[in-house]
Amino acid sequence: GRRLLQVRRGGRATGRVLGDFAEALGDDISPAEFGLLTLVAHNPGITQVRLAAALSLDKSTLSPALARLTRRGLLQRER
Image (cartoon, rainbow, N blue to C red; front, side, top):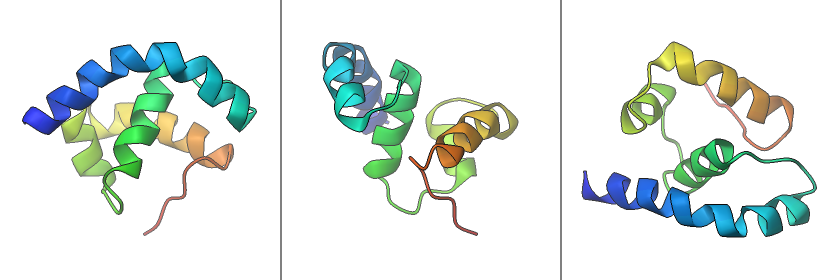
């Protein structure tokens, strides 16, 4: 919907602040990872299925990115 479109457009603008964010976080964060973390932060408790749908991705395509973020301690998965 409209909110997702704003998030995607905002993703382009985040490139400018991504360096500051990554520096503060102490990790290398890609624009895609930053967008994913932002979407999760604004939708607490979102399921992987809903997250994949919001990003127009297959759940299996999203799984590796979520696993990387989880291993790095940037995302917590719950069952």
